[in-house]
Amino acid sequence: MTATTQTTVRHPAPWNRKALSAAIDRLVELLGEPPLTILDPYAGVGRIHELRECGFVTVGGELESEWAAASEFTIVADALHFPAEDGSFDAVVTSPVWSNRMSDHHDAQERCKSCKGTGMIVVHAVDGLSDGDLGIADAECEKCEGTGQRDHFRNTYRHALGRMPSVGSSATMAFGSAYRRHHRDWIVEARRLVKPGGLIIVNVANHIRKGAEVDVVGWWLGCMVGEGLLIRAVDRIPAAKLRVGANRDLRVEGECNIVAQVRA
Image 1 (spheres, rainbow, N blue to C red):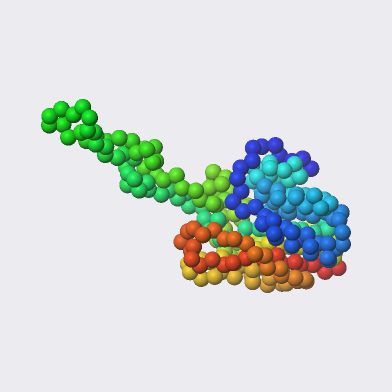
Image 2: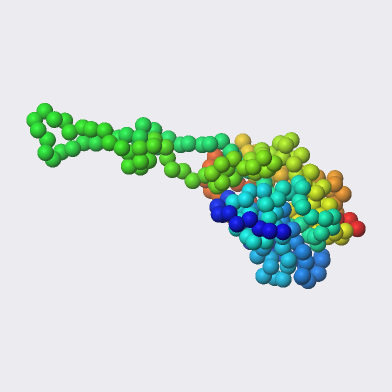
C-alpha cells in the first residue's frame, strides 16, 4: 500500500490523546501485548500512528487526500469499502464523525462590524484643510481590508479543507438517517476486517443541538449490539469542549470509548 504525498491541511478533530491512551489500555488488557495490527479507517491526519511508539502496527485509511498525506502509514481509502482481506486486523480503533457543529457545511460569512459590511469607513482629516473643507472621505476598512466580511475561524471539516468533503464522506452529515445508515454499514465493514475475537473501539461523544442533548453514544451502542458485537466496556474520557458558538453554555462534558468484541 502506498501513501499519498500531497500537502496536508489542518484537521478540526484529531484524536484526543487521553482517549488513545485509554484505547491502548483496553487493547493490552483484552488482546495482550503488542505487536498487534490496528486499523483506523477514519484516520484524518493520522494520530492513530502514535500507537507505533508502543509497538503496535498501525494502518490508516482516509478519504480526503489532504489529510491522508500527513502520514506515510495512511492510504486514501473509503471506510465503507476498505481494501483489505477479511480478518486482516486484530482491532479497529477509530474516532468517526460525531455529527456536532464541526459537521456544519454552510459557507458562512460574517459581516465586518467596523464597516457594517460595506468595506469602507468614513475618515476625518484635520491638518491642511482649506476653508469650507469638512475633511470627510471614504477609505478602505482596515479591519476587513475592504471585503466587508470578518475573518472568522470556523472549526468545521469543510472550512478546514477549504472545500466540501468528498462524495461518500460522513463529515458533513447531521445526526439523521444518512448518518445512521452510513455508520451502520461501516460497523458491518469493520466487523469483516477484524479477526474473530478482535476488538472494535469507537470514540464518540454526545452533543447539544437546539438546546437538547443528542444521544450519539446511545445510538452507537445500540447499533453495535444490533450488529452482533459484544460490548466489553464503555470508557468515559474527560475532554475540554469549545466554549464558543450558539450552545457555548450547554456543553456535554467528555467523550466515550466504546469497546466491542467480534464474536469468535
